[in-house]
Length: 491
Image (tube, rainbow, N blue to C red; front, side, top):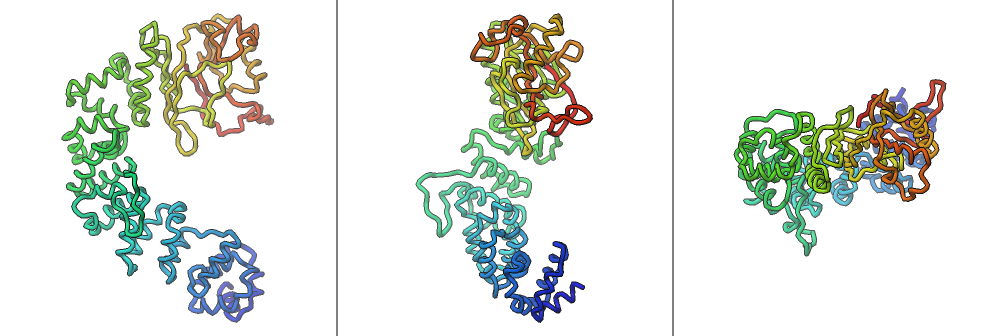
């Protein structure tokens, strides 16, 4: 039946298009027209129908030279952008392809960075303007594009490495520019993640002289880098022998400069580091000799997610502020490990049940975070976090249960609901008593309710506190109008 459509369209019987009822059938007819030896004839015979079925015809004509500019006009008129595959077809099929891709290069990469691989393949297979493209890509004013091009060359087209001459690091800055680029008055360097990845690819592909150049550039131009992270191939993967040997042969510089793996290297290579380097690291983390393995694992995770410097800062700051110098584990639960730092509590968070932008509201019923840092994934899920709070010694064990009811009722009056059972001695220990109600997180102490002044109960696990309008009333009871995860809690 679809073949008949092509036959009738070839003689201009455009009314048959109105008989196609589904998007799938339209796509099938579109593909058949594009593959037909009579494609140009069919398009010419049906040109009067372009505005009746614009989206159909735009998907037919976009890389046909006779209708290329008409296609661009229609796409602007109907606000119908190209797909990545259509950009590829334009590049390969249209005589205007290279010029169009060049002038829309950054727009296309914003849609799909992987298009750069497609462009390189085209350049190597078909382009008659290879030198132009090499100048444009290898010396691109966007240093990230320049880095991605360099990695593609290292991995797939090593014969092109000769374009970089004897010193590949010249291309790590904008001091080298393309023929048509303007020279900047300010020197810019590639971002450290890109240079680290370039160096790693040079290493694993065996271009060791170029690797040494890139590695020295990293050590000399950035305070921290990610080369050891790439050589480790992630936190928990085993070494490959050559990568392990490279780290061990330059251990001190890798240890002192890596952004993610410093604690991992400390745990694996402490015996191989100079005593002065070890002493300096341990002085910054003065609690190390009092930590159990579980806490050490959390420290390692914090460093991996680039919270190590914050961790060092908070330990030093709050131990110095504390009258008490006691250090010790307070608790460990589903989502975090709690470490006492004198008068303060450091929480090493593995995740949070809440993943809204604001994880927990600031209310007088909730202990105040003096510090908080979270690393999230693209969905907003917390992957790692640090929190610092006052350390509260007073438990609610002997508080009359009516006061826990007051706590819940007041929270509701403030417009919030606590989705946590761990708020009583029966269920857990996620609430405690402030030393004084005057320590509450409020700007108006006098407005605090009397029950709170009698027993200043506060939630110490800043999580799972949701606005009431996020709660759904269902036939099965109250349900959170968010994705649910397994229950749990800890102090």
